[in-house]
Length: 187
Picture 1 (cartoon, rainbow, N blue to C red):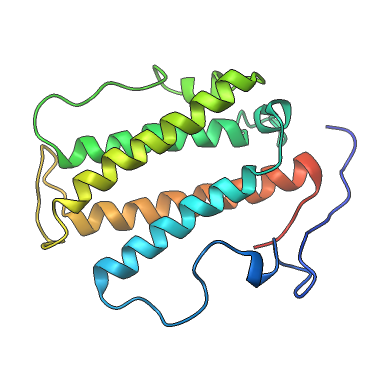
Picture 2: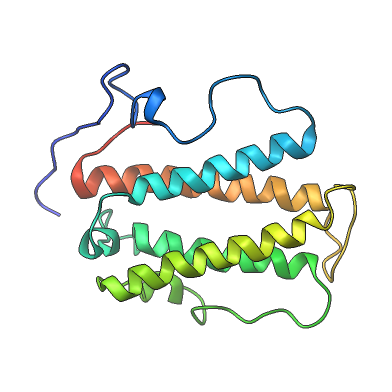
């Protein structure tokens, strides 16, 4: 990438933010959630929304662009990777045979992130499906976050904290990738 895009944001109130607080779909205003489950759920929901926001408004070529060489990461690759991760977490919490990888062997989630609108649409649909499956599994254990269901015997709260950690890390990657794609910056 030889040309750097100019930095920009849609925020007018706080110029270092992604958007103005009144336009932000994440629930960052008002009272904090009550209790451990509500706190974990809100963090997961907000990070999932953050990933969507970082991809918003880009076309298939921009989403698939590997904008931080030599990394193979792209925003589309992150979407596909997080669908794989959502499935993995669900596999941790369920009995029986684990569901297979969605995109194939190691790095196929990034390698297959090509600039095709059909691939983009499918990636977001798969991510939403895998999020819904995992959310349904987590809902079955909402009364006891210390429960250790499934083959891995990981505590439900451990999986939820790991989800937050993984999304936080990849949303940081998404910040850098997006800034390199079109210059958009912010929280």
